[in-house]
Length: 206
Image 1 (cartoon, rainbow, N blue to C red):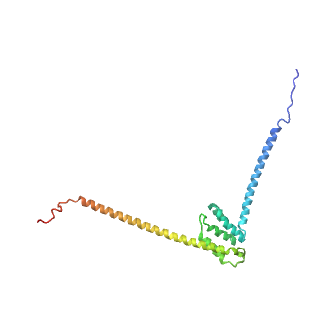
Image 2: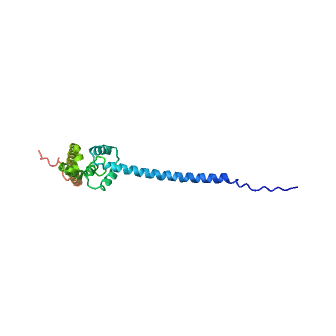
């Protein structure tokens, strides 16, 4: 009997090799897409940051209306960002808008109003030329901040007055309670005293 030996097929492991190469390429492709996505997000954020500081009246007005859709956390982030962008007039106007926004976690109305008043006093400055169309709006915004400051002060004064009245009420209640305790003590003492003579014995004899 003739024994036949089959030679190993050099292509028998080829499918596995191709599969491994395909998987490796897929992993690299996914990683590249993720990096491109991250860079795209960063570029989008940078583009939005550039748009925020465009020194035009239309850009400033658009920015003001965009604040209404921001959360308190986003407004706090915006506040930190604007603090790093210098003191250009449009940046200052945006900073005042963010500082005094009603949804700002820690609003600073006095500082916001001071910033706006400083801009309005420089209405003839050349660097404010592009923002002059919005000066009436900035004036209304500053006046609104002033009214909110006045109302907050009034509310604080009323709250303090109510606290003082409440403390007086507590004092009156303590005094009334102490007086009642004294009256109860005198009544108890009176009940324990011996009565040697009754009212009948005190009547004059006929």
